[in-house]
Amino acid sequence: MNDFVYDIPVRVYFGREQLHHLGDELRRFGTRVLMTYGGGSIKRIGLYDHVIEEIKRAGLELHELGGIEPNPRIDSVRQGVRMCKEHNIDVLLAVGGGSTIDATKFIAAGACSELDPWDFLDYAKQAPISRALPIVDILTLAATGSEMDSGGVISNPETGDKNGRMAFPLLPKVSFLDPTNTYSVSPYQTACGAADMMSHIIEVYFDMQPGLYMLDCFMEGLMKTIIRYAPVAMHNPENYEARANLMWASSWAINGFIDGGRQQAWSCHPIEHELSAIYDITHGLGLAILTPRWMDFCLDETTVSRYARFGINVFGINSEMAPMDIAHEAIRRLSDFFFNTLGLKRTLPEVGIDETHFALMARKAVGGNVLRGFKPLRQVDVEHILHQCMH
Ligand code: NZQ
Ligand code: ZN
View (cartoon, protein in one colour):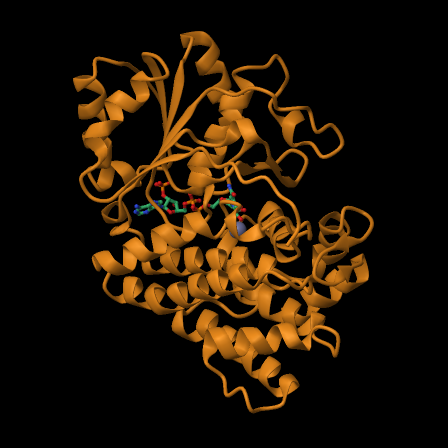
């Protein structure tokens, strides 16, 4: 195992009856609160009213920014920054899925800076993020892990970019994880969330560095949890056990624990971000389409042992088969999970994407050079993977 620092100071309130702590938690950081949310799902499920009640009970001053888009846009971030400055906000309260929480992270950073918030995300500028307002979140969709990680991804329609950035000050201070807040998540978004979590783990698990046995077992457990419970939640949305397992798995898939000091770059995520930058598709859907094709591309004699372990321990494939056969069967089982069990679309044309922008997307995904992930990817390799997604 490599040396590493593990420091995830996010206080988690998990479960059904935790929101009465909200007022006290917000008050730790001040009295003026900016609450952020998306297109209205929190109003439909009654969560909005519940939150307002708690804020009133605590005697806090409330400001609101609703309408944050899925694949959140830099203009929403800019609007939030303006509001923070105008009302002298002390603490941000993000209520929603990854998009709302991500946008809130860059509002929090922008509020402590004179820079335009895109400067934090522009890969050429990478403005330092040394401070941010404190963030409290109430998660409503198990998927991205934004509730317990230091990253966020923002779209800029003017430049055609969807860029991500991690920084320690962006870590939420407090996370309320109530699985019942995800009962209303549609089967489609539940499926996309499951695909996203699977990908977060696969991006780390597929690495040839030895010596991380304990983390391998942990990741296999997380993947089995997602495979077991995503279909249960899709068919029985109010199954608490399923929603609870998915919610906690989403946080642990990306909160840094499974990395164990691994430095390897991710592969499918940079490619998917190019798809959702241009076509505004759901992140988990893009990952489901890409991941099996990427796995296929990376499979060879030097990597086959990893696939075999994955196939045996995650899908229970017969360990007596030849490793290469296990590897192919593992990719087939993963595809079956994404496209049959979860019912996600299998190809790019089915989600309205053709070859028009393949070269541009591939060039940006590899940062104009080589993406040093599980297997190094050049522009031509990414283009090949995208072509494999056409049928
Ligand atoms: O906007 P509202 O009305 O809230 O509706 C949302 C939205 O339409 C809806 N939804 C959320 N909670 C719901 C609900 N509908 C019914 N009941 C509920 N309880 O679901 C839709 C999708 O929401 P969104 O927040 O966009 O989904 P998700 O959590 O998957 O976030 C996706 C974004 O996160 C980024 C993705 O790229 C994408 O932009 N990611 C962030 C990461 C991070 N911070 O670490 C890592 C990920 O890899 C990912 O890139
Ligand atoms: Zn993701």
